[in-house]
Image (cartoon, rainbow over all chains, first blue to last red; front, side, top):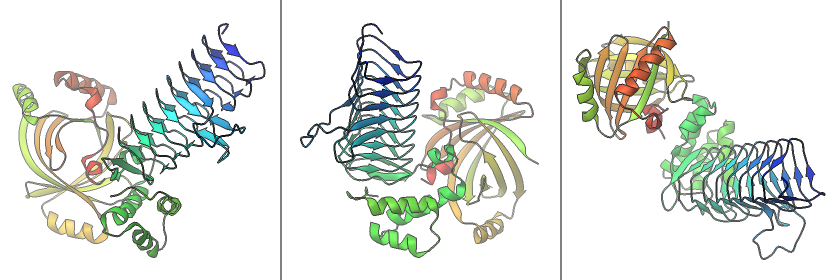
Length: 254
Length: 167
């Protein structure tokens, strides 16, 4: 710890460890049981919860790579139990949403970039060298394969799996597997859903909804009408419909 | 009511190599079947009608956790020759989930079943099933078989053929 520079103004919890040559700036809050590796930069605005591990060379809460940024005070929040591996870079927010968020129990692998104003849910896995533009949103339990570039403002739903290397420029609705170029629906993430305790009935409801959205020949808006026309839309399907309604970039193709 | 299985499934590049290895072990009884598994939608577990060589069928209900790569399952089987009518009844009451078509090479020795499957649209797989009363002895048998067949645990698959097809 003696070779690191830690601001006396930083608010640091109990049982904290830090290796050599790291820097912690003034406006930083760190919870309990946090481990910081060597050569890590924790810049102003970082809000790091309990049990987080940040590995060698990671750069946390540096200013946004956004020409509109004018030095406003914003944060970069990291939830409980999240692990950030070597050389990952995470920027803080702009005045668009005032914060960048990585949820609890996430795993951000080496060289990944989480840009300004990104909102990442809980238990998300971001593989090596995933590169996000600003304002990206990713739902809980989603897995992004290595080297995936994600266009700014793209939304990715919960329980999604994106295959490694596939360019993601459209919104990806929840519960599905996606791959190919251009990015396409490859099926419902049945294995992931079973592991997380979804019932047969919930899984079949999701599958039926995606059969209408992607396999029936309807365009997306007609598919949504078709699903809602039947009435009694289950919660898991409502999540899909809400996602589609809020999509600004349009959802990926079937 | 339920019998218990301890089982693994593994993707393999080609059935022939494994068929030759197992056939050398002469204590296994060998047979070959064409199987059509019709899965129906049920609230819990899995329900399938397995039609064998288009001659006889088994209605099988089973529950299995897909959380680990080596899995245990509980199952109930009822055998019938009148499978076409049974299928009609089931389809009238339950939605069809998917149909899995495969050619299965079966090797049986005591409580051990080894299946080499060529599954339509999915490829070649090996399955090992150990019917057990004591899980400890089943685990020991499984370990020996995995070593004998030189299977790589990284290649084990947690999900069923039906799940792989209904995506």
